Length: 327
Image (cartoon, rainbow, N blue to C red):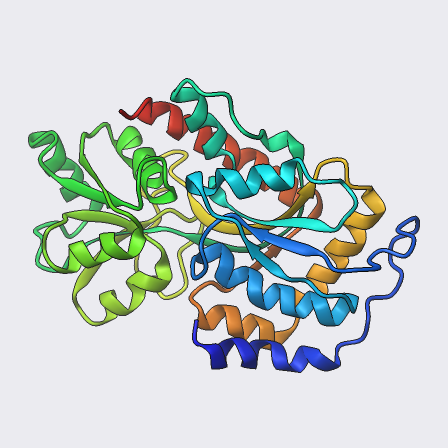
């Protein structure tokens, strides 16, 4: 996201009033800075979401909310840090959908997970971008049915790219290939960007991509979108069917971001942070800033969020188990 987009998205929040005392029992929280940990390098999905949200929360809560990038082990190190942090409301995590996948992948590799999902409590979901299945515009496949038929005729011959083993893009494709009963050749890259570049250069056959990076390439006629992993059709891809529409049960995947805190954080503090996050996400300028970054606000909290995370985590764990141990 360009710097001026970020500034435009948060400038109007400078005059936002402080959050009223919405949660009885929260005491004087917050009385000092709240660290927002991003378990990935700067510039990724979690980081791009965290920075405008943190800037908005600073204005609402009237305390600093520094974003701290603690990357390593595919997100495990930073996530484990928050899971073990004091449950006082001063450490939060901007998590990705890999949250439930990472512990399961550790188990498959014969390692004890550095954290478990139940060590963290959800506050609010910020974004939820369904991935989109894209192929080169010059490819012979104009529908998922054609791709599946070709893959069944040539097992292991058609490639798909990902951002690495057990990454969100890897797991999304595992959901599809498992439901379709096909075998595609996995080609891991160091990130989604290099995988997309490989596809545009003609060295990759298929890819599960975030909608933002794929949209301009589809509009320019360089890529063709065959399906999306959303429950509903994706904005910008209104002509593209979902896998659910096509009869692929449980092929539903989102690259989501959500704010979480250590599980033992008092409910009153979680409620106050939740209300502040909702106030931030309701701001039209913040919504425009995240939309400009390719990830529109998809706020969710409370029981709806708990149900979403429970269902999503179950799907992701099953997909990781289907992948199995990767040597």
